[in-house]
Length: 54
Image (cartoon, rainbow, N blue to C red):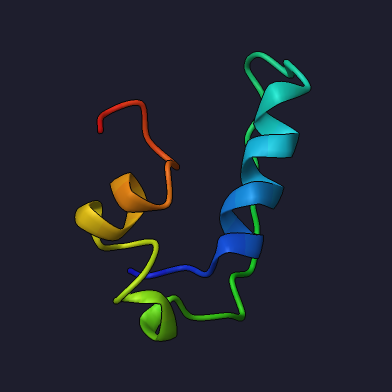
């Protein structure tokens, strides 16, 4: 499963609201396939300083 960044950020936003014991159900209409050379590439993430590792 390669969800796009919008699906991930939306899920994170709802999860951070602290609804313990609740389920989050979502439809993920986008695809992360176009991001394979970016967000799913550890070396690119490091070079773009999206990770703590350098």
